[in-house]
Length: 248
Image 1 (tube, one colour):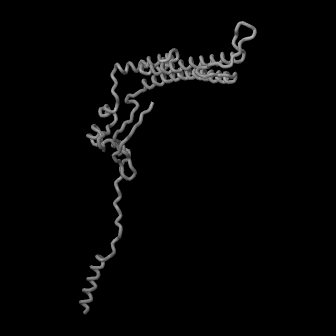
Image 2 (cartoon, rainbow, N blue to C red):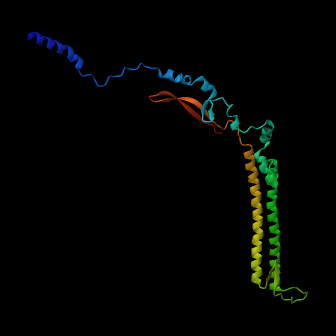
């Protein structure tokens, strides 16, 4: 009996450590220290050489690194040297002064000859209306004078006038003749103001067109897309894209 008890106690002493409760969480090993400065300096090394040279393809577009403008050539309008020289010769101030001196001259300086007929067509319409309303105003003024004072006949008593014709209208009263004169005179003056306004529009248009012709469309004003390695908290360096806008 004592022998069996001794064997049981020996078995318990050996088996109990195997059934002991293990910790639920095993602590992670401490990471080795890293040099963050060295990691940032090697940012460009994380981008493959093929990507640095040829860019990143996204769909049908290729994102090229800085300095590689070969794939951007199709996005810009190519201008020959002679066209560039002609554009650079245009000075907005000269176009403005020429249009101020003579309408349409600034448009000719900008080599936009097709605009000149429209300018002179506007002046032609306003000139026609000015002459028409001026004649009607003169007729109304003369009719008012005849209705009020009569028609001179070489004597001290002029012949009375009961009606006058102004344009296609028959006027029988002094009030009607006076109203017609005021109306036609206002139309005449309005055409003068519109002609001056058209002259001013001609000057402004020549100036704006000259500025647009000399607007810089070179690669200096552009959007550049290039690959970059971006530092992310907790993830280190991850591939990314950098977009740079250049303004003047």
